[in-house]
Length: 334
Figure (cartoon, rainbow, N blue to C red):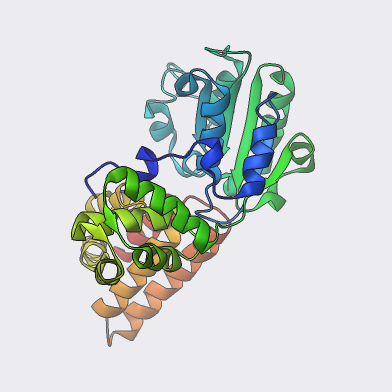
């Protein structure tokens, strides 16, 4: 998808969030810097809600909101963390640090900077399913030290993994999956803003196919609009029925199996970052491609399914999708 993503171009304001209780809770949190834990299923809009809150409370949200994707942090090498443009200025001359100390240092430095506007800034720890206990202990100390001028917000699908001292310092905000009717309302607002012709049935089809994943619904509507020029029932059915990544994933699988790991990982990054797929979706597509590719080869299929089962278990634990699927691709080339 080459056009700007609708998920970014139509990022919601606080008043636009589809879940009434989330809107009400975050609206009350605009008066003072309350630490928060937003928890709910994938695609329910947790990160979008935090960014909406930041735009509401900060005059300069570009500088007063720091987003640290926990899954990416723990799934990256020291070199990748050090070269990340968001963090490289923190880590100049600190390459001898352990990865744990590097992460803790970035967190502490992010929290210690004075806000550009207003009296406090916000640090978002996104996708915190993979946050380790030792890092949480360091986070607790940073939260205590910088409580006056920094609001900490955590998003996670698994709040039970947070240690009690973190839980006790944060207001829990459950974020349920939006209903089909709520998704339709969001989609209607977006297609009208984009000037795209639509029918109610088309939006309802897209919303139903998304199964509560708002991000997926928005991207599906954009794909339909770009390919068909409209979002009607027929257009959505034809487009979404055809939308798939078989050829791309098969190419990724072929590259991995011939040992071209660099090419395979490049395709993986495109699927995760450019196409907006999550780890479970990429894994499912990879299994479909693998079954077609190795039909009749029981040994190859068994090897693929063993590797995929291990990755699926780790994804459920919140480990970095990029790291785990990349490891699977490397194993296939052995």
